[in-house]
Image (cartoon, rainbow, N blue to C red; front, top):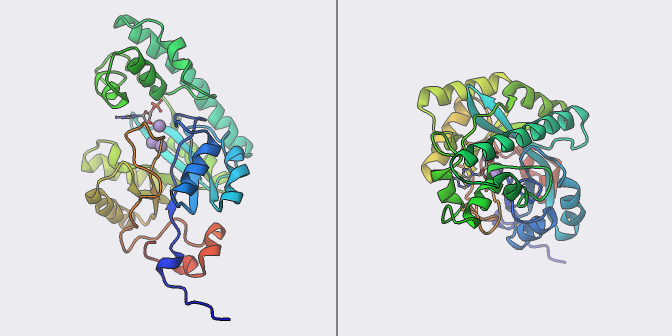
Length: 303
Ligand code: AMP
Ligand code: MN
Ligand code: MN
Ligand code: MN
């Protein structure tokens, strides 16, 4: 029998470590999302719903038969320095009591915030937005995305993207400041459940350089281990910039589309470029990648 040599391209897995389902504000159910990822040729994916891990079991139930390695994930909402920051947890234990209690408290806060958002929209002459938005929320998370869908359906904006220019953001109707989890707490929940804490899409935070360095330093100090270098929210320039931050702060690099479904203005699954060279992939040494060959246990560069 002749065994063809493994070329490097033949064993390059497609990896996407950031995505959302109907458990939070995505438009596909967990099972639909994994099916979609498989159709897009994704080999390794993380489901990272906002502040909830309830979709992981459903995703796992279909992942194996589709040939997709599912990484247990979550995207935790955090307040740092009066700003909202997202921290992705990868390879977390979805049954860990401390993590579950922390996420439950955040979800309760989301409901209180939703009531306040609805009151603010009411002042701007938009009635019924709490009930209207809850109708778009499929599970236990009510997010601004659901308010955005309601506002579009009511004709207040052309699309979700436009809503986030006219409403729900600082200085606009429906904006409510909110206190999420502390950064140290969230990183602790992730790490204590066996996971890796990843600073999500740092290019999205609209921070000056000094604040951004403060964020990276605080994240590292609190036990954070990786940063999203390649993200659906980043430009090609930002891949390079955040690869440099990763090196400077000795953080591993992650890659994720932040896919929310076909109707969102987000990056598609299965289309991410490789990590810039010199990055240490967060997935280095993960058993989930063992099937792609031993080089993934030692490789320093990208896939
Ligand atoms: P929340 O966590 O409830 O404050 O909602 C934040 C979510 O709103 C994010 O996860 C995005 O899915 C969505 N979002 C925020 N800004 C935008 C934007 N400019 N365009 C589309 N979706 C956005
Ligand atoms: Mn979202
Ligand atoms: Mn995010
Ligand atoms: Mn996300």
